[in-house]
Length: 286
Ligand SMILES: [Zn+2]
Image (cartoon, rainbow, N blue to C red; front, side, top):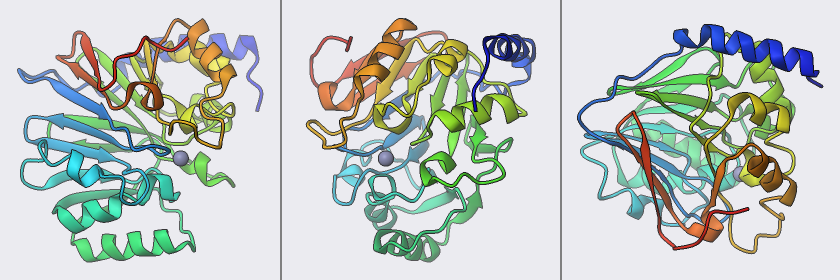
């Protein structure tokens, strides 16, 4: 679906007008840390606020996410989110399910016939967690954190990537957007169909590993990310991130980080600003 410039302006005005309605987590005395974990070609994101931990995806099988999160998880893992059923997102969650007690698991409701999905669902069903299905307009709560669900919506998309769970988190005045592998078609649908407006975004998890099929200039122009992180494996065969996506992000003024270049990237925020630490020293990507 094409968004005309006039429609884009209208949506931007609508988003600004309604932005006061967006769920806002009041900042506490503790910092929220958000870890974009280097899992090679895949996604894995840990959020930690005091004794509350949320894991969004776990990379491929045996990439060590269960070890990485160990120092941060106090008691049970509060929330696990599987954005969609592809192995580079749910494979690593199988070991996490085996090692940790998990209170709540959020799925996008789509089924697959792959061996990885079957193993994952067997582990989910054996976990004894509360299992939820994400739907556009709903919320995911974890301690003092509230995520607004922007995708999947109805009708479901034909491509599993576009049924990814997409989440907006506002911590104080710092906004995150976690996109899974959502692509251009989902970006358009979220803007047009969302009952919840997408505010300006401070930190964007770039859609679909920085593929050229995500991060359209129209979408970026509306959400205006200040920082953008893509997750991709060094030398991956998919060509991620695509050069045009880096150009699109640069044009909007986003500072770009990639797990292939910077290793694990960690944001820490008190709700008024944020700091960034990267495992590997490297300049921002241009
Ligand atoms: Zn993926």
